[in-house]
Image 1 (cartoon, rainbow, N blue to C red):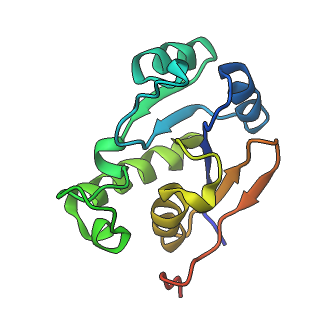
Image 2 (image 1 turned 180 degrees about the horizontal axis):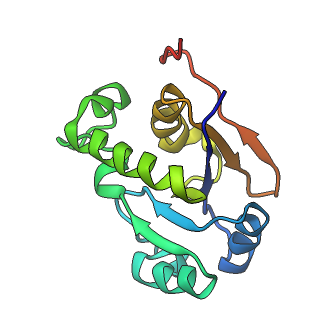
Length: 155
């Protein structure tokens, strides 16, 4: 049984108001940005500096951990198995676990569909191994609990 739950969300093409409405029912306290490059030309309200301000206006703490928990390995590849072994990733997970044990946390990535995102295929898989529940918030308003994928053993 999970010790606690971490939420995830992808901003996709959402407006800030629609995004904030998706977080509200879950009483999120900390928005943890796990994008390697927290800038979006098509949706400038999700650029790191503006996002931090908007999050604070909604009573949310904003924390960028994309340097540690972003999808790219230290040498710039997308390789989730290798990424899990990197000390910087493990340090980011440790920070996340400490934070999530005390506060309600939601991870932010770009892709609206969690099945297309490292927040499911990398971070959620690691959290599940640590007996942390993960719930993906969906842009149409529902949610989906994360489950172990074929590449990860959670025995």
